[in-house]
Length: 130
Image 1 (cartoon, rainbow, N blue to C red):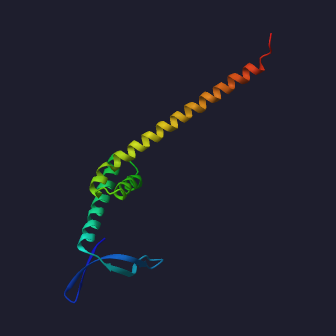
Image 2 (spheres, rainbow, N blue to C red; image 1 turned 135 degrees about the horizontal axis):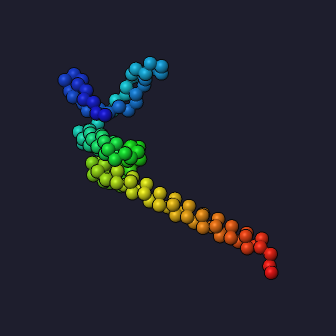
Image 3 (tube, one colour; image 1 turned 120 degrees about the vertical axis):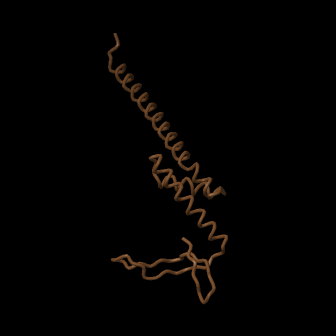
């Protein structure tokens, strides 16, 4: 969030540093603001637009929104442009989900094979020799 504050005819771009709310009724009691540059304001705006795009894409794809935002943030932390990161965040999450499902299926298959082998071994051990 970026706020434009006019103080004695001079405009300042600011961002919230701390927000204090009334504990029960939740209305705002106090907000601390920090003056920011136009560049930072632009970056914050780009990030907000990217989050909105990622949330929309996640809802359309039926994917967990928090996972998509996390994937987007990971890409941004690696230096990627926020909107570019938002564009592929859904496919990143979908790929991870499919990979995890495949790994889980492979693990289940191994567990089933081990259980079957153990069952065969116990039957052969129980069978008396002729």
